[in-house]
Image 1 (cartoon, one colour):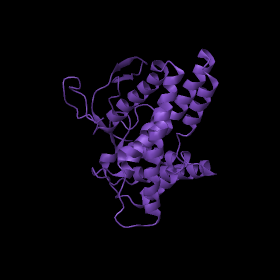
Image 2 (image 1 turned 90 degrees about the horizontal axis):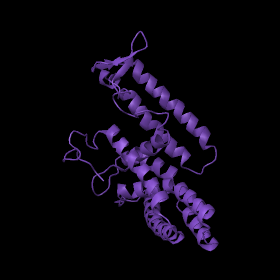
Image 3 (image 1 turned 135 degrees about the horizontal axis):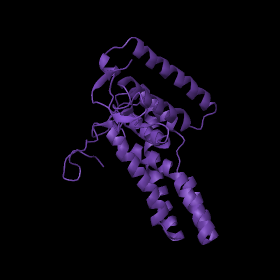
Image 4 (image 1 turned 90 degrees about the vertical axis):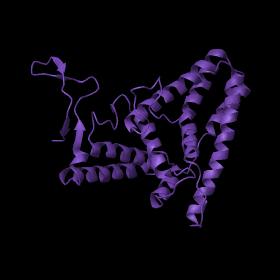
Length: 266
């Protein structure tokens, strides 16, 4: 769903072109998706039908993306790129997998689901995975100009999805990710780069991925530090210092309103 930032219900709200706003909306939708799975599905047959449908979708998209990866590896000419929405859908199914598994376990424990149905549901949920995420990211990093038929850049879309997913899992400790009220441009870019690194090494099944992730973190942090020491543009070091509640502690440790203005990172 794309939001343009107009209409009676969204009057005064920013469109999806404002990335922090987009993240907030997507996090709400992820929460609502989990709520739907746990609150709206009430029977074993419903969860069975849902997992059967999701497995079919997963297999169809995974087959399409696997062919795309093979074409890239063989360096074929005139490669037909998949839709960016297909990549997002496949990743979202993988993210939903543990949610479905918890729902199945809950129903078995509280409602005594018939064992064969429960086993089949677990087997279906287990199939909601794809082992080629790291390879896909690596190939897209080497072919950064690949776009789908709508002109959407695949690497950038995957970068956005990785940021959204990782920030959702860290929402209690990483506040307002990429928001200019809290983060300067260098820090916002670093957050997205780190999230893509998490996707590249944590979504894979390769051994020593944690060590590779640590090395990537150090390299990206070093690049960000260099950008702060020798900035290419002061614009990347500015941020708006009116935090969400627009309050700060004064010298007497009492909350008072904070004036709205832009600052240079000190």
